[in-house]
Length: 272
Image 1 (cartoon, rainbow, N blue to C red):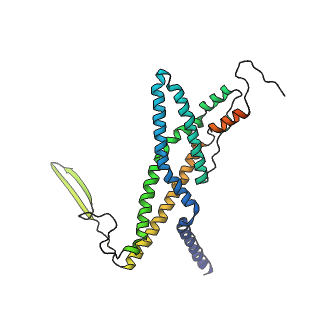
Image 2: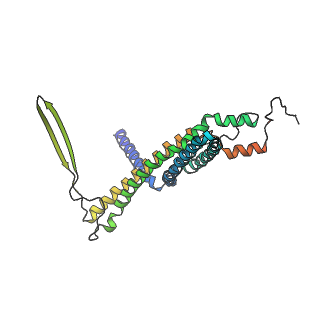
Image 3: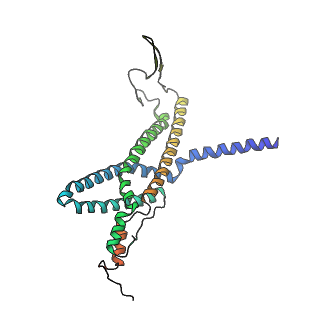
């Protein structure tokens, strides 16, 4: 009897803990930091795609008259700077540790520049920029759909009894779902078709409004959990793509503070 009672108590504790985790997501600071990051991803993703496409496109197109080569170099450096900004933003809002590389390999400036250009994380940082639009599109659609639906349902008890007020999507007929199956038999076509009609739920009483509000709160919490999962997934991807990438500002400052060895062949450095 004691073992059975302990098992029931333990199950109740797990259920209570699960409910607290599900509901508590709405009251965590990190949830709203994740939401801010995901909502910023859409305008930033558009800006990144436009800059990378236009910049590198013009650079490649004008490279035949040699004007494009310095343009490509400028776009390349700015892209690394933008990737550095996104690295900082991701680390600040998603609390993900992403360390840049501030000391390129090589003794001379020429070797260091070659190290930056040929480093794999340099190009993964540049290629990371246009992928931001994919995150922005998915997160914007999920946030707008889930949060607006949950919030509107949560507010139903405040306006359900207002005359002439309708909230939702309405049409002149109820939505229908058609399921069809057709088989050919000799010269005949045999088919089965089923139609499911989805009706509307009209809220006219306070208990119905409170039930809809409770469902809206569940939708809100579920959307927050989905957005947090998306933010964690993107944080791992950003760390994989941006960690150890070169920060052009930090590299330039280090080069100015500690000049490398001469680029001339055979040149030697004096000790002391």
